[in-house]
Length: 57
Image 1 (tube, rainbow, N blue to C red):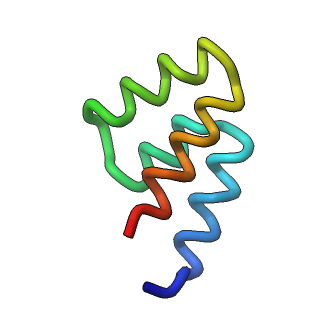
Image 2 (image 1 turned 60 degrees about the vertical axis):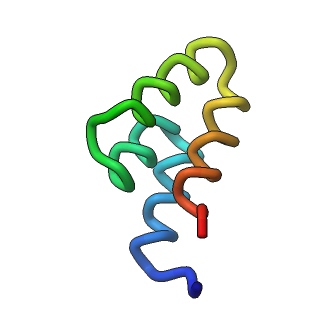
């Protein structure tokens, strides 16, 4: 699966604000809630989870 321009935008959003990247990929749902909680616990776990959601093949 190739990385598209929209994926690049989501990755940049995930670096700046991880829940935004997840929201752009999945919308409002359980993945967003998990990411918000991980981001509150620590910024790096939120970024890792956002990358996992965005780049999941």
